[in-house]
Image 1: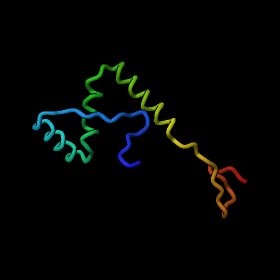
Image 2 (image 1 turned 135 degrees about the vertical axis):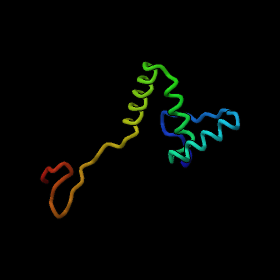
Image 3 (image 1 turned 120 degrees about the vertical axis):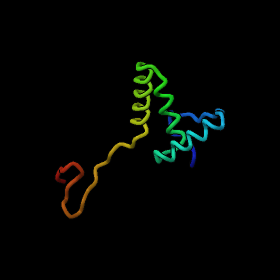
Image 4 (image 1 turned 90 degrees about the vertical axis):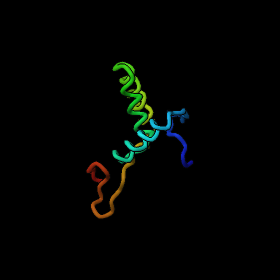
Length: 87
């Protein structure tokens, strides 16, 4: 479904002073990213090193769960599967 948060994430709504929101939007345009990325990075910088490591580990676990398992692919011309194994 479009605009559905990725698995292991939540959507959060909060208010900011208008000038701060404008500065975040400016920074996002300069860095060619979105406001959410700017806010996520700012929050990660706010965390202690131990908290940051814990969050990054949780992200890695969630990412690995959502990644499809690679499948062998048969190529007609070479008769080889992905990884160079002969059929």
